[in-house]
Image (cartoon, rainbow over the protein chains, first blue to last red):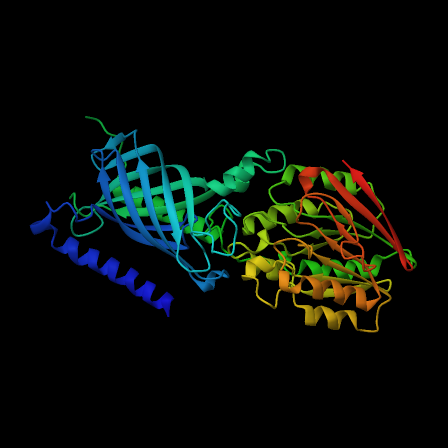
Length: 202
Length: 274
């Protein structure tokens, strides 16, 4: 039941954004209207995730808010997440009027997993400090890159960003740091790819 | 200005194709979640497959030699060295007595199994408290099998018991002493070795069940030893002075393991440092 509520919220979330961008002409100055919608595959926050985001620091960075799901058909137990991502894009290479590349992005994202079985705080029957990590929250660091482009495939020119990220989380990182012989860096890395549709800036 | 001629549509098509390729490739780097639980068939039912191999290959009909270790959690370098050392030992199988993983991640279970598969003998995985973190119980069950289980080799019955009471808020069913009692009352074995991660005198064992556990073992009259890990240090003795020996294997960072030889009503053990 909880799962369906979450899926419904996700749907309303995306539909709400669609209708809000339909009105962007009148409301384009409102700060709370996101700059883009985003969809991502993998990246340790879900099989697919979707959400909204904002350009910050004169488009040298972005903030993303994502809801992610791992559905049962993947063979895994179903999981639902909320992710807050900060992405810095310091280097911008303009290829032509329609295409720009950010070759080296970096950032951090916090992924919260829904469900009382994934505790944020240790339940009362554990002594203080029994386990030092949270089950519910993962802290991820990543590097990546993206390409921003205007496509004329639609009736009006539309602006997209396609990105990839490769990173790890704090508990996999500590495992690697202590075991550099038995583990190699690829053991702890996870990757994600995604698309941002920048509907505000036509 | 002279820009290279790359159209948006061209990149759109390239990126689209790349995405499809990556998703279809299902490369393991595309993790969905640290607590994801999907496994290949080759990674499933490791214990029942190991038991089959043990029963088919046991050489000496009178003695059985086992290697006992525990707490491989986040000690992968040390575990690799253990395998190198254990491969020099003549033994029928290895018991990894809980805390296989540290955070209950599928990745960790796989890292440990990958190292343990380089052993030249089978190994049995037992559930530990850390293995129950996150979706660890689901992964353990898929990968190794039931949390409580038993098997018989050469008349010796190995009873694997989940004693991680604290992970179940000290529920009265962990450890399941009714099940244990039934296992100890079958007539198909000669001596029993009760294998579990948390020893009964540890604060993570349900204190209401401590005495019942000890009594269940001593009253059976056929228990060779109660074998544990969890305490990250070697312990040996009869804490209840009831004739039952309790033996605790170290964690892997102690760089020590136990070689236990079982024969008739007796056993000997050796500490091996590596």
